[in-house]
Image (cartoon, rainbow, N blue to C red; front, top):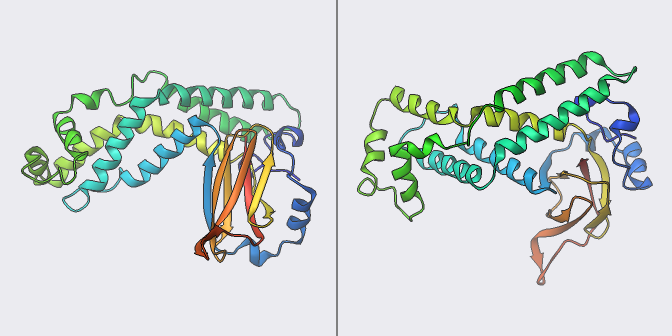
Length: 288
């Protein structure tokens, strides 16, 4: 049984793709007996990073979804927009995300070059992935420190200081922002596009890296006996979980790259007990 996803099917050999052993023989039995209804049941998806670098990637991905760079910014949604924009700036200032993404893509490129030497590999798919990775690396290499140009933007610098204050974006606190919100939509769109261009190349590389990271593993059915699952594994970067929506509990995950623990907690604790002590059958994908 392979944990390799469809993204990498035919790219690597079986031994290269199945880098993570099945967690137990019971997992294989559950996959064999799993019904199509269960496979298509509505689920709630969770992810847990087992590496600090991946933690930052997931936070940035989440913030982009909140930012919605393709959407218009107006007086009804500007709070969400600037909250996300300033959070992205802060994360990029805390760590050198550009260098981390470039290093990860370099590793992907080297991995694909190794796979390309195998006689049984799907050369077309390897070539297509290699071209995408190479294009992303070439785009990200000449970039300077992410967000450095936005620090010089007068509107952003004044607004950012006020966003940390409760109610600090009233028109008397930030008249510059109030004035900007009353400009034409075309003017605001142009400014938002200029600000987003500071991050665009970084996010294209980051999203490709996350796509390749997630694409290395398939979901497999497991059981948390008594609501608890603990495993030691090969080194991992990301843990992905799918829990059937009809399970009245949510997973609390902890661990590091070679060991993790999943404890299910009841959505409605009874008699002071938060732990969910029934068996939980769910899906997990282990991404190296």
